[in-house]
Amino acid sequence: MKLTSSVPKILLWGAGSQARIVVEMLKENGLGVPEIIFDETLSKPEFSHSCFFTNDPKVLKTNLNRITHFIICIGNENGYARVMLSRGLESLALHQICVVHKSSLIEQSSQVGNGSLIMPGAIVHKFSKIGSQVVLNTGSIVEHECVIGNGVHLMSGSVISGKVRIDDYVTIGTNATVMPYVHIGEGAYVGAGALVNKNVAPYAVVKGVPARMSRVNKLHFLDKSLNYICNFPDKIQS
Image (cartoon, rainbow, N blue to C red; front, side, top):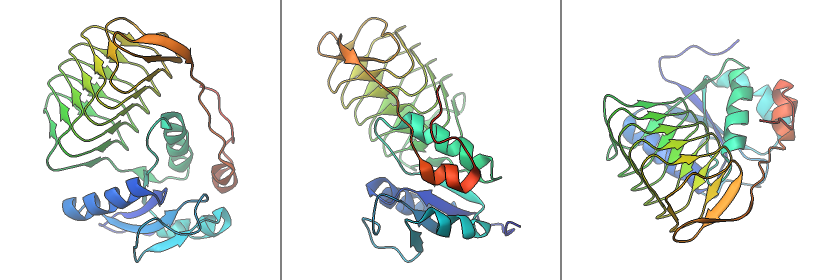
């Protein structure tokens, strides 16, 4: 049985720099207490913290009764993995937390989905819709009336102009610009500094000014830990 408390007891999935930042943002916003940090790729977190750490999925599974909420601390092009992890953890009756830095600006007419991370100075203009497990990094801008899918990552300084549609699992590189009315298909990757002035096909990797396709992107999710913890498939096709 899960513990009941007015203060969320939080699992951080990932123990790298993004987790370190999230711990500070939780403290600043009073959103909850990190209870467990899990990362099977590390022998210890990349930062000092007093909460319980494990890299063993068996240990995590036996301690899940200490947890009420979770945050996926995996950034960059791993949006597909973030979404799959969140679905698995939600199947265990855990709840996602959206963490928004106090210096960001999200208009009241816009929406931000569960589990998203909004970093310092990010702006979401009016009537835009942001999906779940989205990362808006420092200084990124989403202009008016945009639709941003699940598992998208906008890197620092990227600019999404008005009425753009970005489908699930897309990554937009640092200082890239997407012009108005452009549609970027699922799983695409836009390189740093690119200027996107026309539609981008699903899974295309584009770069340059103007952006041109260079290769095909592939989405991967192979997480045996999640499969062990909640009997979720360790490879899921979108």
